[in-house]
Length: 64
Image 1 (cartoon, rainbow, N blue to C red):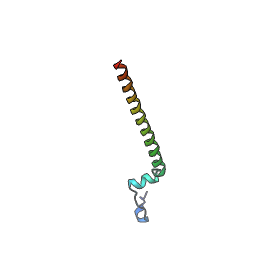
Image 2: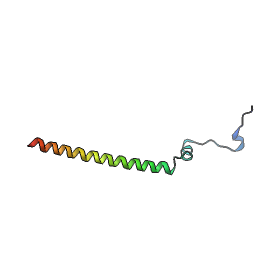
Image 3: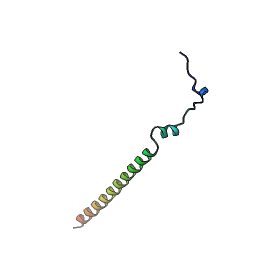
Image 4: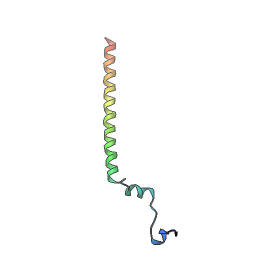
């Protein structure tokens, strides 16, 4: 069996950036990153709020 040399036919290899774009790493991946980042921000803010609230509550109870 002969090996087909695609370079002679003008075919070029793709780098990692080109492969990500072809494999769906374009707009869909960008949108997914935005959604995940937004959820992460909301969760972080929620946990900070709950933590501050609990600290204040326990400090108030301790001072009674």
